[in-house]
Length: 188
Image 1 (tube, helix red, strand yellow):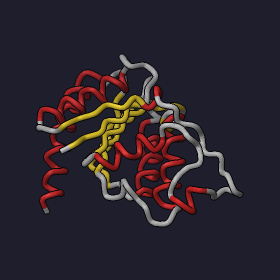
Image 2 (cartoon, rainbow, N blue to C red):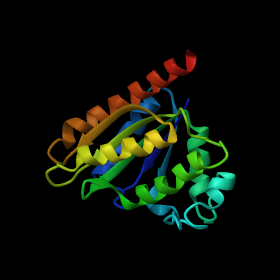
Image 3 (cartoon, one colour):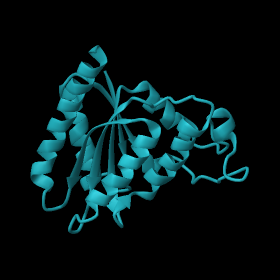
Image 4 (cartoon, rainbow, N blue to C red):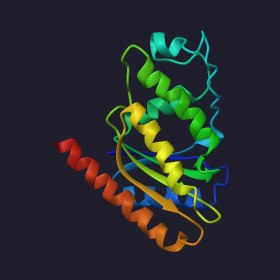
């Protein structure tokens, strides 16, 4: 069982990163092999909308931009489940997440049927600083991205600075339960 944890915050010690690490520890406790990818440290450019908006992604399910998109896509493909922990900015996911998923969904769905992440289970975590009011809208946007790529939602969590202490325990338990659930789904 392999779980890929995508963490999108530039602050590797902040709320978003801490939640990702707790979910990962829970997955490890359930026996999963885990890998943490800091999306902010990856080279992930914005979509160029080449060839009148549809380029190589439509023809070959690949992007013309030579950066880390394919490496992360391959990691997602090789995983049995994916955890995404993103900070909430203006009621949405971090820009690096949106750039990545804008391009990934084109390669996954617009091309000649080469979906690599379709059917993967996902656990989403929205870390909303401040009052946390943007958490629900962030997860709504993420749910749309996941649907475009055929990802199956296990759960979605919102954490704020006020709820941090008890949500850390919840993230660990969610990671553990996520692994068990995905294993059950894989068995039939």
